[in-house]
Image (cartoon, rainbow, N blue to C red; front, side, top):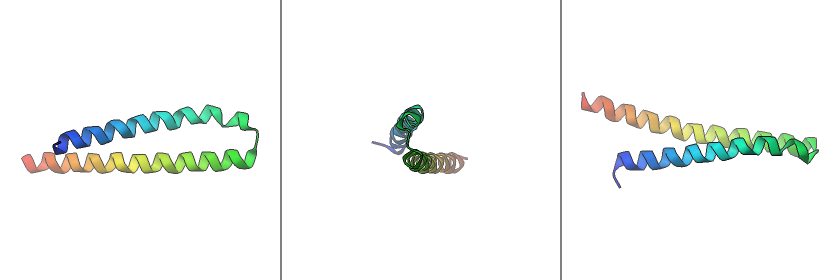
Length: 70
C-alpha cells in the first residue's frame, strides 16, 4: 500500500466512524438518565474530536506532499 492509498483508507474509516457517532445522538434521550446522558454526550464529543484530529493530520500530510511537488 502506498501513502496515498493509506491516507484514503484512514480517511474512509474516519468518515465511517463519524457517521456512526452521529447515529448515537438520537438514541441518548430515551435513556432518561441525565447523568448517563451527559457522560455519553461528553464521550461522543471526545471521540469526534479525536477523529477530526486524525483527519486534520491527514490533510496536513497531503498539503506537505503537494508542496513538495512544486
